[in-house]
Image (cartoon, rainbow, N blue to C red; front, side, top):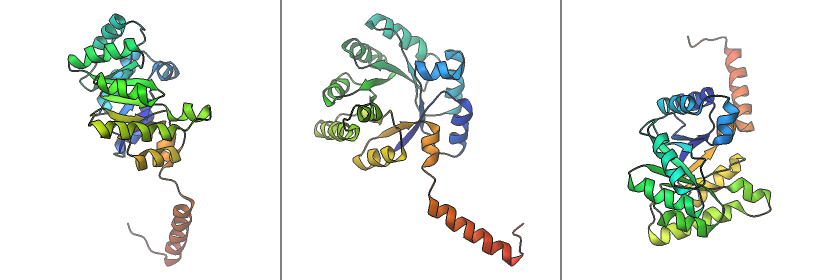
Length: 217
């Protein structure tokens, strides 16, 4: 499974990248606003840090606008994945942009039918929003499973990018089902390393080592 960070926080991206834990980054207008920085500046800096896909989102609702914005965003760096919404216009823009050789991330997916259309349009990534479905008492993981089954049935190459991840359990379940990618806030990715028994064992080892009075250096 590939790990993408869902953030525009440069320090967090650099920290995860240096640990070898980052395969890409996803951004959106809300994350750009939270960063307080210029979209072109911060996106270029992210692309310089990360070798893998960096999703940058269009904000127009019409096809021509999405395509024009997508082309401009794609000029930032070779690893830009243009992000478009899962609407009919978004699917048309996806088809056009993919035809020009650009990576496209179709976002705000909430049904298997939507995911099927995105694959037909040639999307590089489909982003089903797990957490937002859970918020309205629907099973986000059931959607991941349905998309995995459909894509495998027909050999679609669109990668399933599990999004709106709220917990480490979401990541575990998405990996078990076979999502190709998960994008999560840096804090959630970092929590994957935490376990109370690891901490307890480390404390015991260090206490015993201290008693020996030795030093490795």
